[in-house]
Amino acid sequence: MSGSEQARLDAISAPRRRAQFLAGHYLARRLLSQAYGGQPADWQIDSQAGEAPSVVGHAGISISLSHSADWLLCAVADRPVGVDLELAKPGRDIAGMAAMVCHPVEQAALAGLAPAAALAQFTEYWTLKEAWLKCHGLGLDYALMRRLLAAPRPVGGNAASWHRPDLGLHVALVCAGGVGMDGLHVAGLDEGLVARSWLLSEG
Image (cartoon, rainbow, N blue to C red; front, side, top):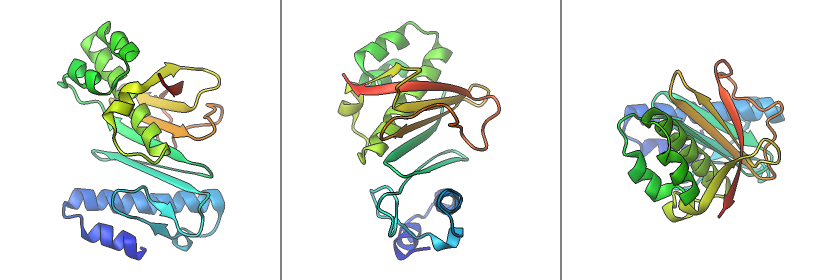
């Protein structure tokens, strides 16, 4: 581990969060090795509080990490990338949360859905918007999230989402320069995934 990674780890007291941190940075090194060569230990990661991890000596390579419960997600790319992973949580005030982070068009779409479908759709919107923020190097910004409109776009989209209905699991990826669904998949979760392509834009 790099010095910054060790400092971040030392600042985490919760055992589960420590395990997530270690697993995420190990996974990032494995993906870097698979995508760009070398051994996982050859790759150094800088990890500063409040910032996305970065690859030491490789400014053109981006890393994005996300976790929810026991699930972990990582993407590496040769351009800015953002990912988010969320488990749908029953019992949420979907209308109230949508008013905070959803575009008016999205709020109207959610209002016409049954509770279970509304929960799934809201979680999909959330993951897409958080992945977009990460791709652009931004933290959570509810006002900006409300301005972002997620529209299904089979061709020419800049985001992709995957949903495992049996698990209530949602995954989203946003990559600078656009995202083509051909050949794009989530390793380790292929079976049962429902994939969709999106265009996220400030409305």
